Length: 221
Image 1 (cartoon, rainbow, N blue to C red):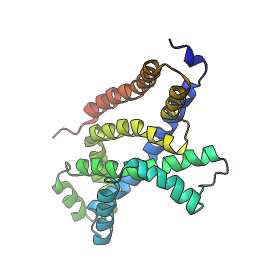
Image 2: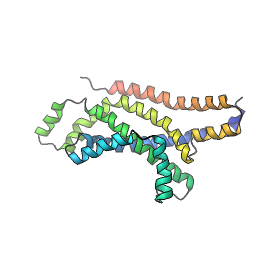
Image 3: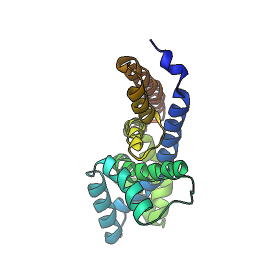
Image 4: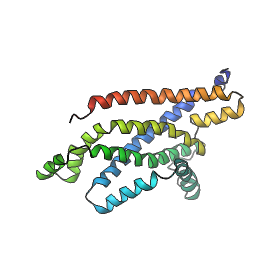
């Protein structure tokens, strides 16, 4: 029933999915944190940019963003992100699209963590002469990240599943391989079961481990 597994590199496809997830997660965490800092910052222009970015990007379908990364940036504007190989170029553009999209949700998760930090702590830090950047980096964000592990875990799990959209621009991850197998093999249920099991193996441990970490580091109020 599963004889098709010998014909296709299923592990290689899921390894591509893992790479997409990890690189996109790191980029989204960095950009999402900066967006959250903008949204709670004292500069109106930056607050407006952060708010507009989040409200616009999270309401655009991910497929549209991924296709724009390929058709708009690569084919129209000639932006290849330093890659000459088509497969490498598609992978990098997919990572960029996932970062652009996911960072909006990371921003909101971190902002929810920031809102759990008592205002008095920030006011006390400012009273002793710390700048906004110092208050954010030394006082607020460390506590905010601890409080936001739960929401960030949900974002990471969603990101893992969202990597399937990269198949739309030819990135050879799990969903792309699934499409190829279904076209060539008459075993739809078996193929779907293998791919579904693969994603469960990726996301279930992530949720359990980060859920445990979130409970361990949670700020006691």
